[in-house]
Length: 337
Image 1 (cartoon, one colour):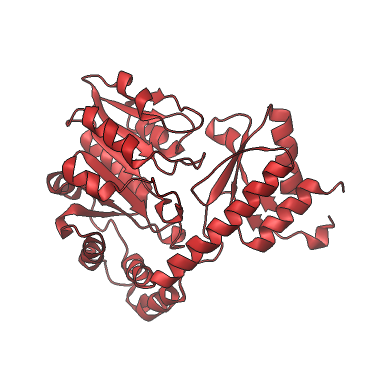
Image 2 (cartoon, rainbow, N blue to C red; image 1 turned 180 degrees about the horizontal axis):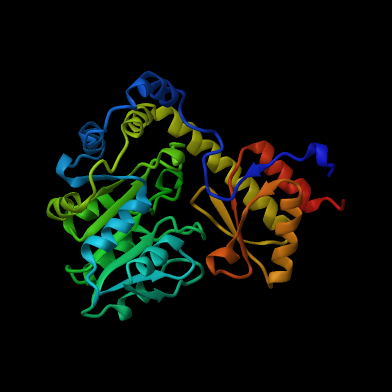
């Protein structure tokens, strides 16, 4: 491929290739004149989310992205002598933030690239305080089902917080995906994390939220720093929530392009893990094969995630782009140039 044809395509951070709703940009433009003012507590967004999910406003905690909420959960609820359980091949922030706060974390094994909760149960001790579950799991794209989650919740001690990180839930098409909101009514130790960074296309504005039992929410809110959130983010999130059509279109496009990429990668002999997210995980026989694919795409201006930087050998993660970018991937991988 000639250099003059090389255009950088970012598919390494699971961003929305279709941007954000036009209504979001209008809301930001309308309110940008107020950036000289300190932000207030995002009560409007709390209420909007509470209405959307049929919970009380007191059950909503807003944060600067779900990563900040993960940080807050560790900082707030895990004592120095307590432990955290996370899965191998999962969201790297769990272990990074646990390490940053000098909290001990233990890895649970996956089964066929799935966060198998049966593997968590033997690891739980009196010191266990938080279990993090990415669902769909980043980077493998696999899910645990409603039945699997409920079965585990019945066995996990009530003092242990089970944090289910549903950053990619809007992309899921599998009907067995958990109805975590209904489960939370029976198991108040279940904490649900979601974000505006993915399908809503607001990654740069850093907006996430937790749906959490009221007493736990109060503790988190008491411990957060002043001016923890910016006013333009709230305006953007409110506009994003109102444009349900944009979310539906992005989910539909992602489903179609995800299946297209999955099938074509399989056809050329790659070990692709079926995904419910907006990305696909590929496992190679060795790092030499992986690096060859990574370099070929990189040379063509296609930036994907080399999982080596997350401590995962022999694997790549490719974000689901638009049809044009996916066709370019397949051209690069099948061309003999």
